[in-house]
Image 1 (cartoon, rainbow, N blue to C red):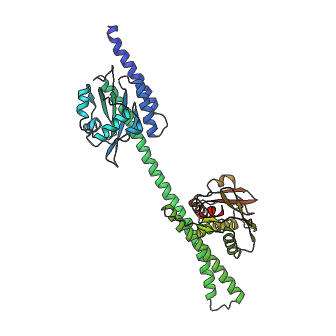
Image 2 (image 1 turned 120 degrees about the vertical axis):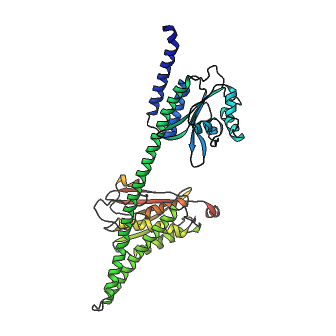
Image 3 (image 1 turned 135 degrees about the vertical axis):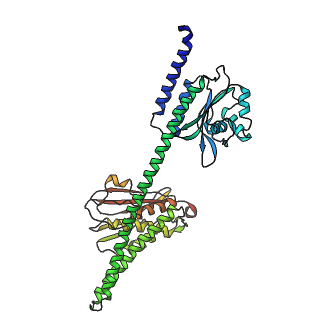
Length: 433
């Protein structure tokens, strides 16, 4: 009697071991493709008849079954296959919703008769062989009332082949895999909902911030204009000019904010366009500095370029906008005034423009997200800096559209220097050579 039970006991022991190994793999913290790949790797080691296998998942968007994980196949080639509903072993088992044992080559051939030629060719290349399966066991992957795909295991050479005794065991393995897929998809849905809620919350915060920042210059413009229109007050000429100057400054601020918002929308839509042409950067930088110098008496804006600074191919309007945004930031974050120096440096393959201020500086942890949309540096002194949080992100997008890069260095209490590079390439570089 013990001798008779020996092989059966050994088989059950092997199956329990296999189940425990697969179950342990399924508890790993991995993305679904990696998780299924790890499971298939484990199956290839513990399931004797299976020489090759694949997890074929139904892709709702394409209406096809696609290989998500495999062993014994070249997965990249196997992913070229796209099985239609009802096509080949996978399609038939999925439609039936029950395991299908194909014990002989003839049975396998019958179920694969309707496989389209392109899929046959891809399968042969994925196997690197024209040998077709000698036996196969295909089991639907379903859990929680949802059907996800099919686990297909195949024998190519033998001597071990699938039999009816393998069906319950492989069905249990498939159920474990289906539960993992179901859990991953539920988690993905939960993450998507959480991300959408977070995006809505961020959008609400951004809209509130933008509304506040846009309302500030509008309120100032309205206030000064109303004051000028008061019939009972005869404002002196100097005071009238001051009010008009302040209105002009707030209009400029408003124009800059609206421009940044519109440019940010163009960047998000992938419609940002630059039109390079040969440009002399020193006079362009001086023009921006002179424009901003008229807005401040606390700061001294200096432009320093070497006399032999080369002509660079760039979009003058966009690079002027980059310099304006950085200079504007430097002034805002230097509430006590000081020097703001724009310098040009010539390197082997690029020119580098730097803008340094003597302002409040930026803590190290704020340097990483400095160029992200809507990020606002917190002033160490609590000083509120007006703006939309879009000036530097727009500057980064414009610089990168030119093939350059932008970065910052800063020390709290000593000031900040922003750098951006532009490549020395194109017609101007050829002419200079």
